[in-house]
Amino acid sequence: MSLNNFIPEVWAARLLHNLHKALVFGQRGVMNHDYEGDIRAWGDAVRIHAIGAVTVADYAVNADITPPETLTDAETVLTIDRARYVNFQIDDVDRAQQMPHVMDAAMRETAYALADEADRFLAGLHTQIAPANFIGSDASPKTPTAAALYEYIVELGVKLDEANAPRHGRFCVLPPWCYGLLLKDDRFVKSGTPMGDQTLRNGEVGMAAGMTIYVSNNVANTDGAKFKVIAGVPAAWTYAHQIREVEAYRPPLRFADAVKALHLYGARVLRPTALACLVASKS
Image (cartoon, rainbow, N blue to C red; front, side, top):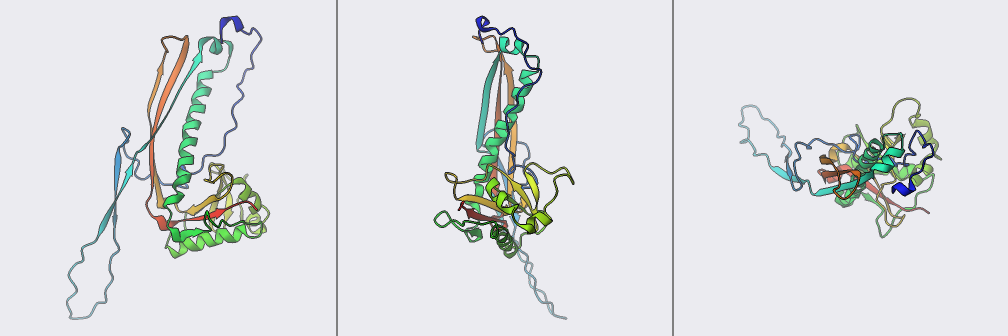
């Protein structure tokens, strides 16, 4: 804003904040952060080792046991291959006219914008889920009704049971229109967690079929169809991230305060069978 446009009126004491959608996929109730470690730069890699199954054999009295087996191991690499930044400025005149801490509000918006970008990326990891754990497909998506959606959630649970996924800590992330269908089913309404009973995590709305239900506008979809409803356990996938750089500076050709920040992150599905996916479209 130029000095010629200075507005002498009294400004509001509070800023009008943006409406933010819930950020779901990156939180610890949905995805683990076990391998976050020390991320210093783009391209850093976290090497994750997994031990194979142990063989159980019959024991016979007065007989030699078999030689010790060599356990197999496999290495998975989690690469920090995502780098996103913001760079903004606030003019000195704009800042002078407003009583609130404009920069503080701008930093809150920055944190949300970076987290939202990562959340949408994490929702796209459905491509790494085991093919056998899909219900429906892009070529033939399911069109759940109020009566059928709960049954589909049960089927997702069956997929996880068949893969020996733990029952504890299971989740399912729905788009808002699916949540609307679920609210019409007495089985969910009777078992759902009332919002007033406890402080729920971001996007959490209750329980259904033994899973914590989350609602997110970041559920991956194709032009408002073929929504990828993911269910699973946090141990199935991992996320590592860090705000690596936050720098405040004065642009040389402006009377303004500026801030730039760099967000580094990466994610990987570690157990593809411990996640399941319903491909759903609106009727």
